[in-house]
Length: 206
Image 1 (tube, one colour):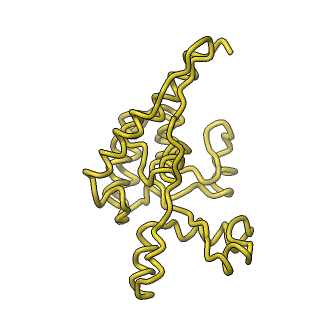
Image 2 (cartoon, helix red, strand yellow):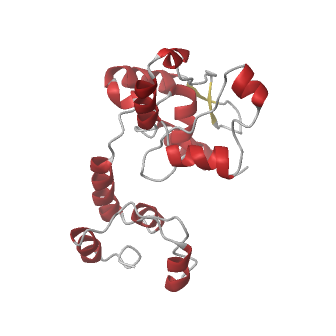
């Protein structure tokens, strides 16, 4: 309610009393709050700050979230290479000529984890996967409802598996996911966000 009403003191009080800012709303809480236009199951304070455009709160919450994140993913390990990749992506964005002036990418790439991981000792593999993957999502996609890695042909015989990469805690952004799946980095500089925004704006008459 503090986010909805723009009450920063309520957020500070929640944090100082040991409240987890990454905690998600449960179905019971959403029913209790009884405002479907504001609250959804799985929403965090960050989601609400984005929905209600509370920029001051969002800045505080994202700083807090990034301090809690203990992951050590490739894009964070080698910032120089990451910046080089970001420049490459920006250079491969082009705008179509004519009436439908949307942006598109000229490079088609797919990010894959190196096969050499299989040669590492099991304990090292586990540590590496803990850093790179979202274990909870992986379990959900593989076991609770078999959506990925259900094919014996691909998984066992060809030793090819899909992995759920860990995404930034600041909302499950589709554009972050696109860049992770293709280049192994996040849309930190909002290159795809800007391209999408400009495309929607420039092509609004369509």
